[in-house]
Structures are given as C-alpha cells and as structure tokens.
Image (cartoon, rainbow, N blue to C red):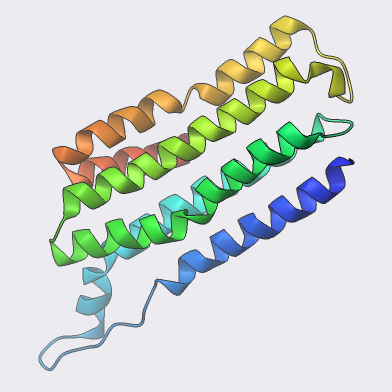
Length: 190
C-alpha cells in the first residue's frame, strides 16, 4: 500500500483532534458584580491546556509527516501501529478539557493531571514504537536507505520526550500546576 492513504487518513484524524480542542473553550457567563475580564482570566487553565495540547498535536503532526515520509510503502503492521497512535491523539481533546476543568473548579486536579500527562505519555510511547518499527523492523521499506547509526539517532531524538512525560505524570499527585507546566515546557521545547 502507498503511504499517501495512510498520511491522508492520519492528517484527517489529527485535524479533527486539533479542531476539537477549541470546542472546549466557552464564552464565560458573567455573574452580576463580575467583569468579563475577570471571568476570562478565571478561565486561564482552559487557555493554557488548549495551547499546550494544540502545540503538542501540531508537533506530532509534523513529526508524523517526516516519519511516514521516510517510507516508500507501508504494510499492515505499520497501519495497525499508526491506528494506535491516532487513537491516542484523538483522546487529547477530552483529557485537555479534563485537566482544564479540574484546575478551574478545584476538583480532582491531581487525578485529572495524571490522566492528562499519562495520555501525552501514551501518545509519545506509541509514536516511539511506530518510529522504531519503521526505522528498524521495516528499514527495507524506507524510501532512502539510512545507515543504522543515523536511524538510531533519529529514534533517540524521538524518545527524548518520554522522560519528561513520565516526570509530569508522576508529579501529578503533587501538583496539577506543575504537571501542566512540564507538559507546556515539553511542547515549547519541541
């Protein structure tokens, strides 16, 4: 199978996920005695989570394009691994809203932060698994052969984000704010 169908489907799923993020941003109700500015400022967790997830999904989209672009063709195993990756991306609008709402309402913040960081960690792990599979198990399907050291370097760079996501997930029990800050820093870094 050609890679164009894989990329087209993946682009569609990623585009929907990134678009769904904005649907969780609501125009605030302004109670009597409050100002619109105050209510907008009160929604900062929603904006912070939105920006973090938007940048993260955007980076995954770019890296996915590069990863699939290395292939001359694909096979069933690559398609299945890609579906798992897309499933992890598609859940991000929900986990983004979960952390933002929990921080804003001061309810279940730590658990929501663990779910959010955990979902980003799962996405990162699945990306690394697919990337490794393409670079090593299916290196005969690469459009341009790459030396083993170059493939190892590409994979090493792609898994560098795993450790900070593990830390962000572990620290969720301490502070949802720290978790959100770490995940935002990872997005800005990449």
